[in-house]
Image (cartoon, rainbow, N blue to C red; front, side, top):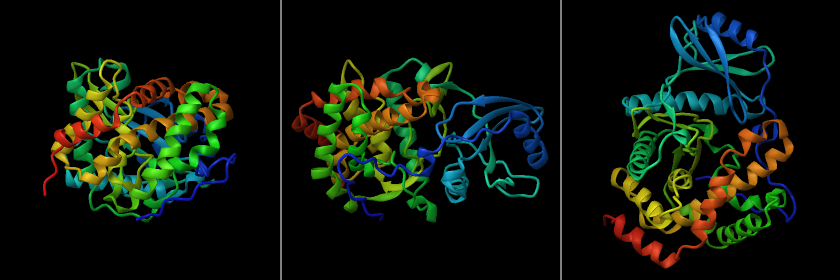
Length: 354
């Protein structure tokens, strides 16, 4: 297990990891197209894709559609190569999971190191409608939770030295976010976030080392999921493995649940999402006990990091802040729930096998 990092001094920004504190690469699209042709034999037209840390393009050509990715140099090659190895591990463990496949180069490798040190790789393109743009519903939430549970199970046993990298999006590091609270302009949201972090540091973080740990996807937000345009309750693709990390397993569930807390029934949404996941990949009692707090901590992570990064990179602020409104609203809904009632409902919905 990786130890939980200590809190930074009050008023200081936490170590966000190099790629979060670095602008994405800015290669000319013509050069990207030339490199894709040279190393992968993939001619075609390029379309830029939004990304927080990397430079990504959709390539469409005679051989199909692919994602061409140039990694943030600050992240290092190990993390990118871990993603490739994880995708191959998933394909071997559960071939029917709708995740991208790694496309080998002419020489049979998974990537190319460019002369300036940037790492370039190519993945298959998955078709579908982005979850954030599709109709929402309870059947869809349940399907998403079950798909995530399958993905977590497919990643069981995957080990990589790069999986212990520092990633501030990783919920286990939420206590360090106190250094970013000052970047949240909304005073009410800032106060809510401070309360969540105080509880996390005092009551949740000490319990994390004893939980089941593994490498997980860690970023199942609505911009990283595709659904079937003809049936929004069917998950058609899981994207962006850039936040994969070794962490308590339940953090993966909490990340996804943080985006499924509905306005009409936040209590039911929180419990039902865990129940659907539990039916496929059973949780232990200690995971259920911290699950609601981890959901809240993920919302705080979204609010605080997005606020900090938007102030630092205003030209990319619309993309960076895309999940801010839903996280703020979800945090308010969670804060209004009765903790005891939630714990009782989770116990009933997710029976623990002795």
